[in-house]
Structures are given as structure tokens and as C-alpha cells.
Length: 106
Figure (cartoon, rainbow, N blue to C red):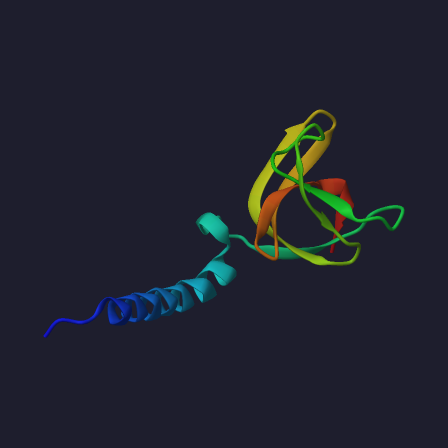
């Protein structure tokens, strides 16, 4: 029996949605890319302004998102020293990037 094109599309959409639901919980628990050692910290700016989430570790790189003070971010395991700063790779609601370590607190 042949399915019309619309039925194939619906089946494919349902299958894809089901697969995403299976992947998402483990992604959230183990950290993106399987970095392990996931811990949650908070953005702590000195002046109450949001902190910059950057595309790469370093102040010269593009700001991907701004993280409001006191908001939780997930450390995903990488640390880099660039210039005089230690940078942490974090996940903030699906936005992955780098923040200066001195702007994070427990």
C-alpha cells in the first residue's frame, strides 16, 4: 500500500520529534558534547550589568548573548586562559559560548 506524500511527511515529522525527545534529557544531564563534569554556577557581574557570552574565549570575539546577573549557566568542562583572564565554556539555555571566569560564582 502506498502512502500519499502528506502521510509520509507526517510520519517523518513524528519520528523526528520522537527521536529529539529521547536525545534531549541525556543532553541536559551530561552536558553538550559529552564533556562530563557538568556543574551549575551563576552570573555575577560587579556592577549589576549582564555579562557577555562570547563565541570564543577572548574579549575580542563576538558577543553571542548577554546573561543577566544571577542567572544560572551550566559549565561544560572547558577552561582556557587568554590574556589575563580564565574563560569558561558554558551553556545558557542552549546558547553555548565563553564567559570570563571572574564573572561566575556559586
